[in-house]
Image (cartoon, rainbow, N blue to C red):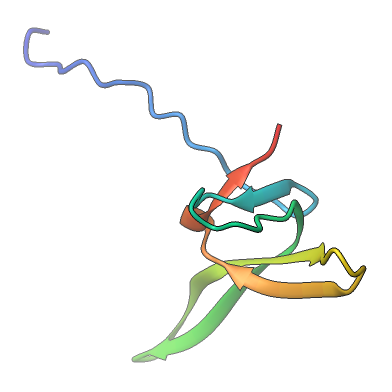
Length: 82
């Protein structure tokens, strides 16, 4: 039992469609509140197997002029708004 290491609890946050998020980088002046539309993946063929690769989350937001914008963000660039 002495060989068992104590690991810190990893508090991962899993984002899903419908969540309200914001860009994590505070140095950006305009960080709009966005909502996640869908998870984006790409398929590629590795030998005979077809594999899925995670690309990011498609988010939508509105500019201050009321124009809808849409883009795909990496999950490491997003933070969940509470």
